[in-house]
Image 1 (cartoon, rainbow, N blue to C red):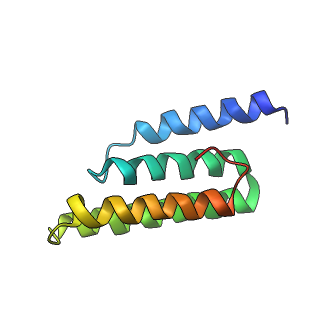
Image 2 (image 1 turned 45 degrees about the vertical axis):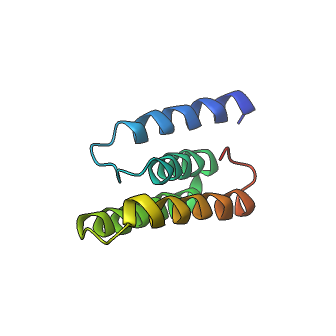
Length: 98
């Protein structure tokens, strides 16, 4: 697959992720989920599917935390955790755009 095709797949996945009806309400978390899903599409195969499932798992976790109104979740903890998740993913999957 050419680099241009991979970029196109990533952009389509990013657009699809942006159109999801639920968001966490935290920009850093929403950005992480969109980037992880784009990475999953780029990676493809078993590894890509694992990344897509991980994005779904993280989204559920972060939505539940927000729904429980955990004190300072959206303002203090979530941005830090989501940025840290992005840094970890950037290290683990340098071939993807984070």
